[in-house]
Length: 470
Image 1: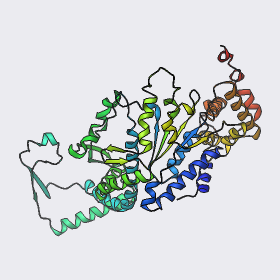
Image 2: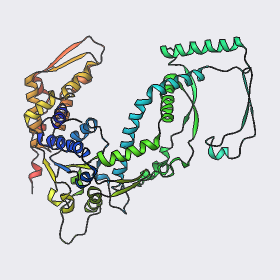
Image 3: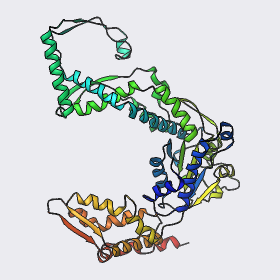
Image 4: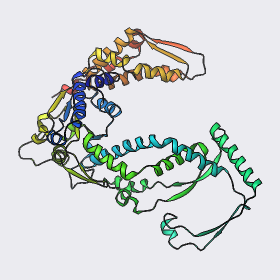
């Protein structure tokens, strides 16, 4: 487990500033590790200290959550508060965030098991591919189909299959030697990659998930396949595909055979309960000013009341059994432009004891965002244009000018934070991106301060006075 300093160092590679938020998140993650090393009696008494991050849009709230998901070795689910409605109304109920966390935990645990059995599965898949590539002759094997079982149509070959009587024909030593030689030749070609584009026909499971799309379209968060589970047989269908694509499917099938899913689910539920983290974004959108004489708002206060039991600690029913939320860490974030944090119902405020204020970005922050992160914007655009033989670079003066323009546009128009840099960069590089076609030798393009001032539309810096009209 990383130390708080190591967590902050990892976040610094992608997120500029917001040291207070990084510090709070790092401490919370480390406390999860400390909590896991305590006795069972003490662990029952210590509840996680949930965090709420407050700050304008585009300053890094969601990015912190996104990077945390890749950084921590724990089940992580990110949800949008605006997608939930109060129980009894059409829409997603808040319990679905726990179901999302369980699915993320199962995927995490299953990937670990798959990594442990991958070499065995690859060897088994290689033998199955070899069997598919070897076409048996009619003299070696004949098949006499018997009368089909009438239940075959219902189960489509899963569980109940038509009876067949296979008559194996004895092979001579020469035939067996020839077959073994052919098999060795095919295996050699498979391992050398010489059969990757060869077409073969395999039986694959038919995807049934799309059949529940109608229920989601009308706002019902319900999956028939999840409810019925393994009661319905899996539908099979024959598909022709290359050896390269078939290998991936067969390896997955072989890994599924080697993994005990009951054990994976048991481990995943326990891991979600003990180490799970849920990030609730846009929580300010379900917070509204409470007015005297008005009842609760279905899409606002009602959702807050539904979230409250999850944060306090309860048991949520899922298809994998009950999941306790007592020790799940909740991190919420919102801009709170229209509403205030104090407009949240007091009970929910009390369940987020750690409040972190994120500051607006300065011109210096914008300049660092352009250059410092591992995936900075200037590196992204340089990589894109390098495909068309354009070597793109920026002078220090150009970076200063872009940063100043971003700050001014946020001040004179709507403040959208670091997302303003995307608007400016697209406008700045529009001509270069349009004219670059790759049919020319390598061209070096240097963006300087003069170029920036010439290509940034001055009208974008004008103040919109209409918003000050009363």
